[in-house]
Image 1 (cartoon, rainbow, N blue to C red):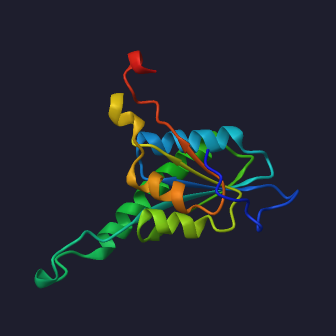
Image 2 (cartoon, rainbow, N blue to C red):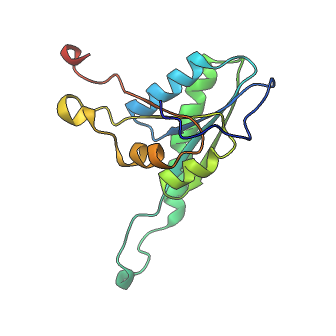
Amino acid sequence: MVTNNTNPNSADSDGEKIVVGIDGSTGAHAAIDWALSHAQANDQIEIIHTWTDPATPAEIGMAFDPQIFADSAAAVLDAEMELIRERNSDIQIEGRCIRGHPGSALIEAAKDADLLVVGTRGHGGFVGLLLGSTSTYLAHHATCPLLIVPSDDRPAEEN
């Protein structure tokens, strides 16, 4: 867990706000699992999925419909929210998609949070020691405590 500083806007006895960044990966599932298993009944969990337009050279213009990417992001979030609701009924859980760079979008979404939770890419071996670019960005810029949950998709001999 990385704590850069304490959040002056954190919740009081009304519970804590936990923001969980997801991308549909095994690491994201580990982050959701952690948040659900550690949240109290009066806590609020906000699931955030971000999306960006693919990079295209300016000279070819926009060769795609951006709504396709928004719809795809919404489908990922909807699937995750359905699974979460099947497992949990006591904790207040909301989800939203944000168009933008994952790191900066999660920083903005967590500006009034008590905790930001994300997963790792889940590679085994030496690569597994490295954080992804989003986790690294968050570790340097988060204004609330950050928990980076390792994924559990490594081969059994590495667990």
